Length: 96
Image 1 (cartoon, rainbow, N blue to C red):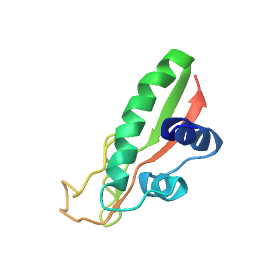
Image 2 (cartoon, rainbow, N blue to C red; image 1 turned 45 degrees about the vertical axis):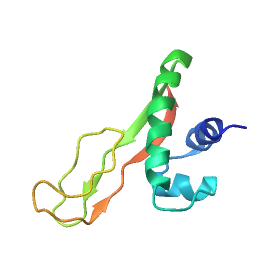
Image 3 (tube, one colour; image 1 turned 30 degrees about the vertical axis):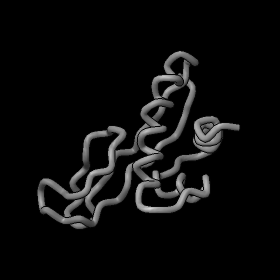
């Protein structure tokens, strides 16, 4: 099973953050979350053809509560309070 197929299989069961996906896939290192984000971008295109959708719970600042746009991205700093204490977005695959 390829990495993308494993990610799709995991996301069909429940929602995951990029860090949780990296751990579930056994990825380690500094770029593991970025690698997962790039895979999610590709997976989103595949799902459109299959009649499924990638649901995104947006990232949120844990300090001031600012909610980011629901996109496949890892924000590093809150634009409102400049805090770096950001809860990662969560992803889940659902039928359309």
